[in-house]
Image (tube, rainbow, N blue to C red; front, side, top):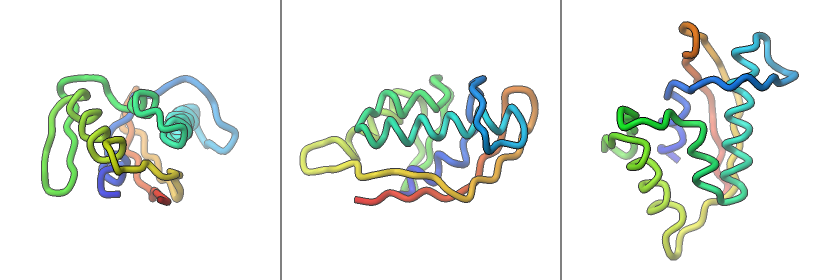
Length: 117
């Protein structure tokens, strides 16, 4: 669960798809990315889930007291933690989102995630 909490603190690349509950186009785009990520997770589609992350070797990923660098390392970490033999992904949803735009194309997203196994 700590993995997904760290994700909520990451900066997201904004898409342009609107959502009805957003206050601004930027917030709508962020909510859409998170909805797409939850949908992908719940389909057990890690590559689809990872589309919400910055696909860069400069991505920094914090989890369980460790730091990993790069999109590929984050995907590998998710695979080992949730798709290796004897593991399960569960059902993911996000709530209590607080979205603060920081500038064009950047935002800080805080909130809660729920991973039901």
